[in-house]
Picture (cartoon, rainbow over the protein chains, first blue to last red):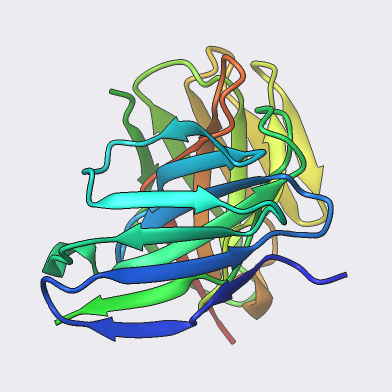
Length: 114
Length: 112
């Protein structure tokens, strides 16, 4: 079975631009979470979506937004990019939004902002 | 705001050596998880511990949860090059929330 897939794998943008990252969960999983991992640090929670509804939001500015589609795939959008947005963006899927459900991570999208 | 500190930050050892890495929280864990992240990949769950004082073993890895549920250690016996990676301790969200709170990580390199 396919794991969590993310696209693109790498992306280079300039300050002020907008970016859209995509995630496809494991088949049968209805929850998707997004994390930002800055170089040298652990991942930081951005959003969780379950059944197309936002279930949780981390401490990120409004420039960050996300949505989940009927097929449970998800997009993360970041507007007005800053140099500090350079990071590995990880998507994780789980069967439901319960805290006891294991989250499975994709390989991430490496975003570089110049 | 919870602080999850891991030590050491970096560790480089020879194959066959033993090692221990630590995780300390400023507040009680809801439940504790350890993940390993290899270069170019997402984190992979190694273990979940819930009860204070709990010890779990996974082949050559031994995970210990402190009695007060505010600290944990991961011990690796006879390290192998395949153990190389970033080890992350995590507080799994309580109150039904499924957001993971990650520590700062220990980057382990096992030299052949």
